[in-house]
Image (cartoon, rainbow, N blue to C red):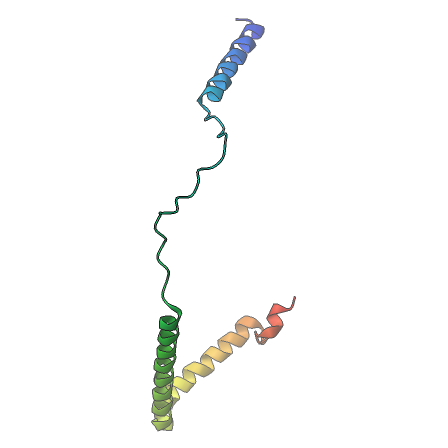
Length: 112
């Protein structure tokens, strides 16, 4: 087959494909959108604000109680009992300074 006839066959195949695609497309919607049904039930709301407030207050009280209990327990420990925890904290401080180059992260990290 000559090159020209191959090109014609390729063109005719692409033309039929594009015409098929255009036939399969959905027609554009014409007209106004459907009116809203006034009898349609409304969606239920979320939690009432007073319930959320009471829940948040309860959570804050629980967190405060846990913090106070932990603080009183820490104060009651002797120096030898605190030693392993203090050693871990010191080790983490050194690792942090090595990792971040001795720079503290805080408000300064947000200013570019």
